[in-house]
Image 1 (cartoon, helix red, strand yellow):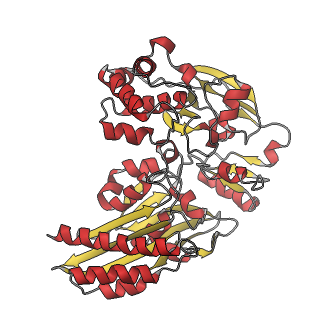
Image 2: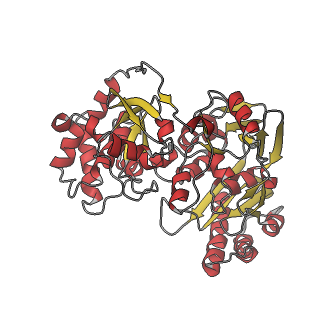
Image 3: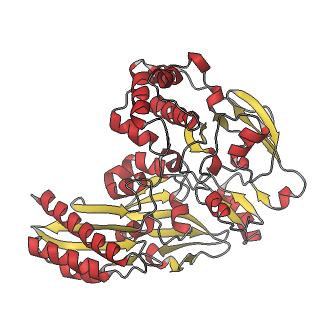
Length: 455
């Protein structure tokens, strides 16, 4: 495949395989070795670059998705005249330097959107970039120093240039047209899917490359649906919010309708990886992968979501509670894709929650997750749904706990008993004592917060 894109404001071309990682294209084909490989799974940030202005892990981006894109690497900054890099040097925020190119680009991505971040915002923006030897305090000070010098303000003053390639951004070679499909719109994608039901769909790819590292076979056919119109919209329609399956968690976190109606979805999205992962991971991928540890399914169970499944000839709606047929299995037909998620709008007095726990405090795969909502009228719970994840092949409702809490006032005794019932309701296969205990505590936590908000 002949690939063309804009690299550091210059048009470049390379002969690559469609599924080569952008990281490898940059380093091995184009000689931009400032971009490093660390974990190869999107967890360390050493390979961070800006892709069309967004921070991404280049180890998770297939070459075919870089066609016609605008890529910025550490080599594209102004060297010794770049105030951000100078701030890193002057604050002693560089030792071995392996992680620093990605760290600098993560800081640049932050400052171009938020020229004067506070310490908490800096920590959040850099959370997906690990440094083993420098010490984060010096890195945080370096970003603060660059911000105080007006680095971000000057980035915002630069007018973005609309750069277009002079010719086709990708040209498939040899047998590639028989196994690589690049639809221009959703209609074309559905046509391809009808003719090739065994095809693998590529969107954010945040699980795709980690799975290949685990020796999962490379797919025989792939279709790129990243960025397709019809899959990237968030719309309020009637009494529900509809989110396209290709919407990223970064878009969900920043969406005003989502923040207004579904704060628990914002909370869940903000816990899925660092910023670079959130810029790529999609809500549809989180659902269709059917991982038992996926964060979003339990929340959508509790919120009563419906999934819109579409093929060339038919559109059908399936409650999310009926979408999973078993571990890593869904009811998606071979000629269908997940088009969107429809979530009924909650009543104003409804309170939502989402909690997760993993092997570390942040950027972690769930060992357990708890999600739900409750409505209280006159101090009495009139409706409640609670779902848990990561402890069974598919999410499950805590039905007995729900039934017990309906019609109850949130006294200390009711909260204590509900927490105990929740801990007894789950039957995890591993780390059972820990998961049971924490599930009960998280349910009690939500009920205590719910009581406090009722005054």
